[in-house]
Image 1 (cartoon, rainbow, N blue to C red):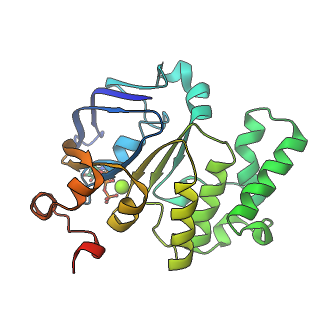
Image 2: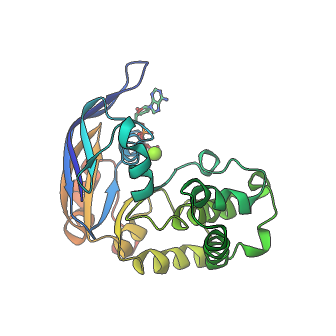
Length: 239
Ligand SMILES: Nc1ncnc2c1ncn2[C@@H]1O[C@H](COP(=O)(O)OP(=O)(O)OP(=O)(O)O)[C@@H](O)[C@H]1O
Ligand SMILES: [Mg+2]
């Protein structure tokens, strides 16, 4: 479903954030990407929906190369939940932020109204629909971003720190919601217990490279491997 080949990326100041990375992700896979602060996780996932266009190496989704020409098709397929909700929400009203994507796709207005209401209700945000996103709490913003992505019914869901700011009940709700989606999912998180609960495969990134890749239990249960990459065992394994 996703093929990353020889991907490299340097920021204008010369920081090498991704270095010759290759990765294949099968359709329906739930992949967790973990790694220390600054490992390059966000830079990597920002390449998956064309927010960053690959300049070194390539990324393809469902056989379609991520490039400027294919951006509309890529946006239709890949929903990216940004690490910072403020990058996702820009309209004056929450409702309009969630309706923005479907409107851009040219969906029928009646279908848009149903889809937006469903997404907002699913995430307990219906009562807040007239609020400016800037006036939402952090956790509400996180769920609002999630609604804006889910309403597009993507084939691939990419989440960058989805549990940041969520209270325990909403975190649990997100686990159930994510596990109920049969699509291809990629999750970047420092919440290793969330990764444990939602991902079947885990990769560790370190300094722009993938340094480990395997079944969740093998990777997240390996204390030495985690510590060598500035990580710790998930809380549930810490005794
Ligand atoms: N706009 C930028 N300009 C220059 N360097 C940047 C920029 N954004 C990120 N970087 C650098 O690129 C590297 C990778 O950053 P990235 O945000 O991808 O890390 P991350 O793994 O997502 O970290 P975190 O866990 O803190 O979110 C870091 O060294 C960071 O300082
Ligand atoms: Mg990040």
